[in-house]
Image 1: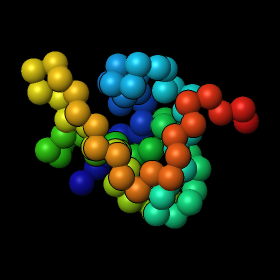
Image 2: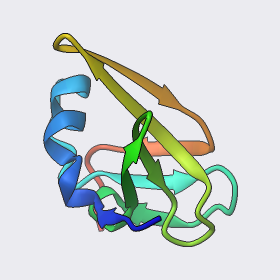
Image 3: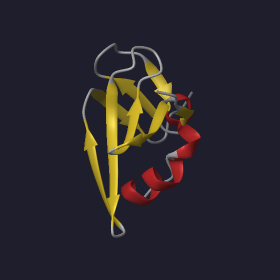
Image 4: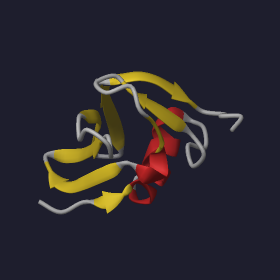
Length: 86
């Protein structure tokens, strides 16, 4: 299965969280590595959209949109830093 980078999901995640996530960092709960949302691996042809860690490929976020209702399932995420300083 092929993936695209996290830029494909930034708009939907920003709507779901109510804040711009284009500069947000995720710390993977499985491997502990920090990565920007834009660097995540995004799989679009799943039941929903699956966002995976680019290092260990753990599923971090699943986004499902049905009738303009967005549901996020967040797992294997230690933290999401919406305003990283570095």
